[in-house]
Length: 189
Image (cartoon, rainbow, N blue to C red; front, side, top):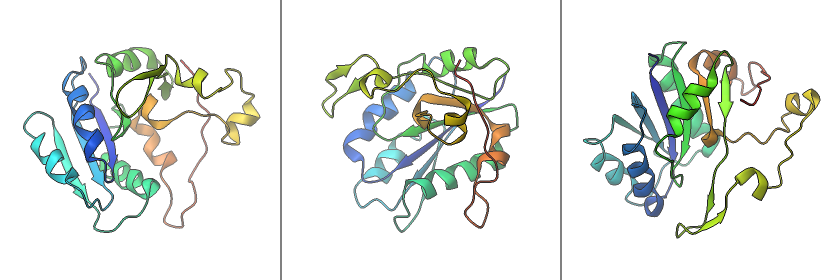
């Protein structure tokens, strides 16, 4: 069975982090490792992460200065690339997510022979009140995109709703000159 690695980016999100970590504790699919990269937070987020290290397979990596979410996720993905096997899975997470218990299990069962799958989300506000049953409908995201739209990056697939094979890391991580190494077309499952 492939391993599942979660790459979590955090920044001054102490008010959201505990509900998210609690939702990870309830996942029906075992998580191999959670790679949490903090982007120079000035709140108590590091101590919250450390307090969950007994409940979750969590490693915490702290950047002293704020570098932005792209650099934070890139660092987490570089760490995952060093420890994941090509057939393993990567899931991206935001500190203000709350995942349904079967999220990883459902995405894994759906991936089949493709490299990436993605789902939808219920939209909630900061207090947990439901705003919409579907993020895609709420954001008015079209269901039918042309190949040209996918290739040009106009696809609205958000990281926290996806699961992808670690073999993609060689193709999607940025090069040292800051340019993408490759563009890959994915299908919805």
